[in-house]
Image 1: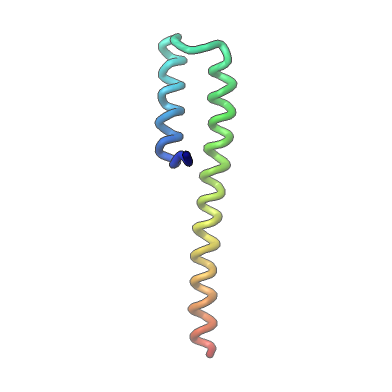
Image 2 (image 1 turned 90 degrees about the vertical axis):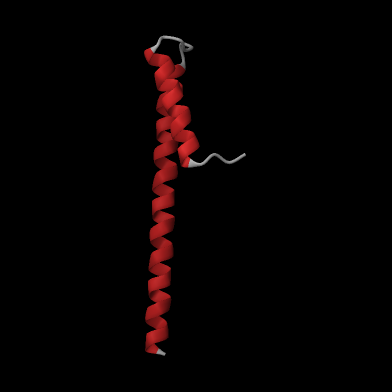
Length: 67
């Protein structure tokens, strides 16, 4: 099952909350750090895909105007 960015953020929030309440496993800091890296990568990829899509549409519109 693919997680959305919102689901992933909620999961990270729960982990940080558990850490603050000291109800977490010893390796939670490592999990949070890895999770942040994954989240950052996912967000970066989505932004790049969005910009690519916008640029592609813009180029198609420009080509239609030329023809």
